[in-house]
Length: 254
Image (cartoon, rainbow, N blue to C red; front, side, top):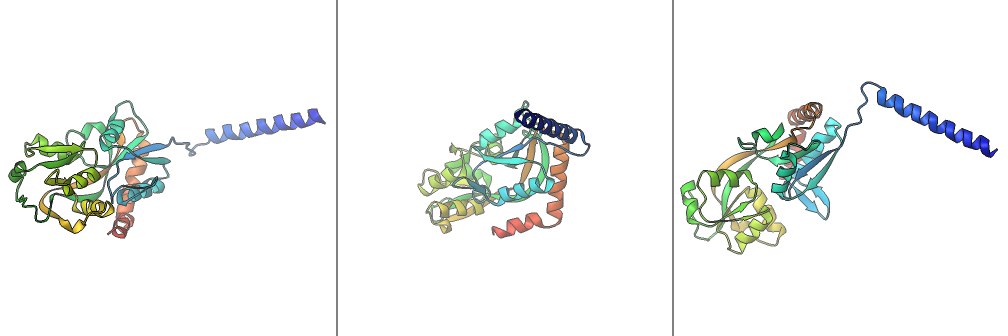
């Protein structure tokens, strides 16, 4: 009886292996590797609620990946580190979102496309005495910047920034603004007011002094990620833009 049971078990294992081999050989069945999707904390676009990752951008990216049926995992890391990971030529199966596109970044990534546009402004505290009506005025003040941010790179390279302090994210910048360690910061007014409120500051004290740019939030892949995955995500992005899904997600946060 013992030998018979052993034979039955062996036969069952062999049958299972046969089925698995057959599945792997069937056309149209793909066992895709998981894409690790990086971004940074940037409320309300990317929010970390005690390990639960959410926010406007994160919900959009999750919808794009789920619609495309590409396996994924989202991770928040410091912004400069996210760019370094995904922009590394040796990396594959990684992605980044909330990424502005410019000439310096163009060849580092496989661009899926823009899913959202954000207005970026020089922001100050009301009654601070700071007046910025053009980029030439910025040099008069200490500016808070974020390391690796597209506007940080652009404004510094074009010589518009005088004294500045650079930090890893907008949360630290907002705190510095309210503590008057910097006089102006460069970010979205929506993000700045959301972060201020979440950190116990009065968001109504923030005012926009000068709109400097409109930046597109992009989803991009590491260069070695397959064209098949790019095609699936690109198609998914366009469908969700066309059918109103992305706009609905954005509206839910307004």
